[in-house]
Length: 412
Image (cartoon, rainbow, N blue to C red; front, top):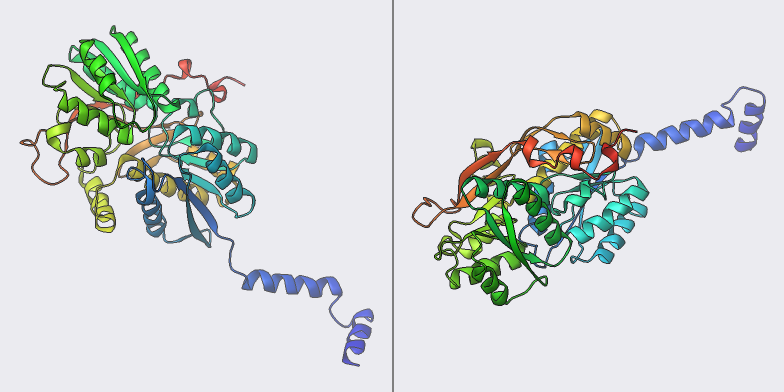
């Protein structure tokens, strides 16, 4: 009876019409429902050869960024998810598709291993979702494989290869021999370093390419030693670099007068090797924990949580997540295209970057630093491992626009 009276009242115009009634219900649901989360996915190697360089430390760096931002943006909570891609492109693609298509992830961060990153780069182009690379270094990510939705945040093979080459050439070392890991990132480092060597009047005597994650590099190192090259360039990373330096020390390569330039050597690698073995090696980083008061303050927080100093890649994850959240707030939306545009407009300012910019190809323009590993006598405290050789300004650390293969830098 009551329902029938209500229906008669609505037909007579004395009660709320059906559309108005349902509008009120929907508004009530919208007000009472929790806001949709902004979801960030950290994808990296969490148990393999690069896990100490990125891994759980990168996940915690992202967590620190979210905590420092206040845990929410535009009234929505910020959610963090993480996964291990096992350094396999097919696994990385499965994770990325699931995150984008069914789990509502808005942005993927980190993605070490260039082969995985290049595969994910293609996917984000198709899905029009964002990826911010901290871990991978192949310059092709902002070259021939560039995407309007991909950002090379922390470094690339051009920056870490060209900078030590320039420092070595200025010191009079003109001849080079490369020990290169035989996959995309190693090839990119060797290629970019070779271009810088030739442009600076140097010579590449030869190259030896070794399989990924190889324990015995003695034959390759002996060939490099016998080449009499002034510099042996290590175009590898992680355990391959550590094993190269251990065995180079055993063969007395540095004692014989040859210098070693490690294109991608992290503070974690130096810590594992010890200064007795790593001393004198040239390397390039975008970040070192002991650069200034701000880097020391953040690194101490990271150390207290993780019991080790952060790598360049982990610090980069913090900066990438922070800048992304600033852009979401600035754009007043989580829409990928709008957030990407806002990220390009906002200057990058944090403890590792001052007035950085995102170029049209997705390359972050920032200064880099050539360091030399200290001797045991020079080190004054735990983790005091580097001395500065040269600061490389952003204008020199990035591949020139005229030389880039990225179509996004071409006039439309």
